[in-house]
Amino acid sequence: EVQLVESGGGLVQPGGSLRLSCAASGFIFSTYTMNWVRQAPGKGLEWVSHISLSGTDTFYADSVRGRFTISRDNAKNSLFLQMNILRLDDTAVYYCAREFDGTFDVWGQGTTVTVSS
Amino acid sequence: ETVVTQSPATLSVSPGERATLSCRASQSVGTNLAWYQQKPGQVPRLLFYGASTRPTGIPARFSGGGSGTEFTLTISSLQSEDFAVYYCHQYNDWPGGTFGQGTKLEIK
Image (cartoon, rainbow over all chains, first blue to last red; front, top):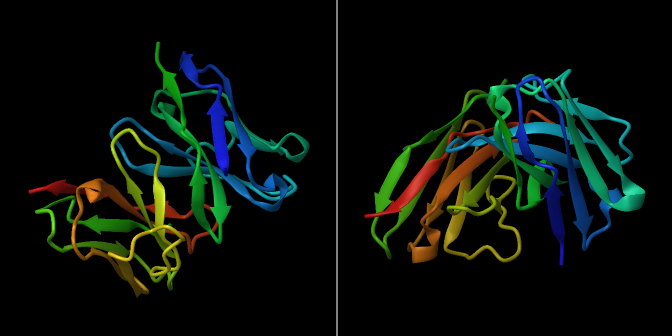
């Protein structure tokens, strides 16, 4: 079964940091580009970041560029998102998503990040 | 950035009836348009890519169409499990693209 499982979410104060992880299984992880997509409470979907097959190329939404870093470990079938200088408006469910032809065909169950003082 | 606008925000339809959801892009995205379904408390599910291509497992009562800036998602005969929020997503601006704000399909 194709599966993505996120972890690492939690409650953090403004200005703090968190590292999200996503464990992939059921497919050849190294052959797919990967993304993070988030959803603020009661809101729509927002693309956050993309990483290439090898991890060499990374892209970010303007709202997180310079604060978030995406990475991957193909040997461990894992995707990561290092989030620094967190802001109140970073509060969201963060989804790990497999990319298929520009779309997102497999999603994890999400991990909740709450930024609050 | 290409802005994606969905209409209506909420659509009330009776089971068994037909529902048509619209999505408009602020500039042409060709057919680089996807639709997702999200039920309450669940993860988004890919319904269409390439504007009209259904992934394996998506029922035939769902159909997608359009190109350029105007797109539609049609559900021919609504089943109880179809009531959800639907998002369109343009991925012509790669990577990532932009999502519409969603259309909530509710039971009338």
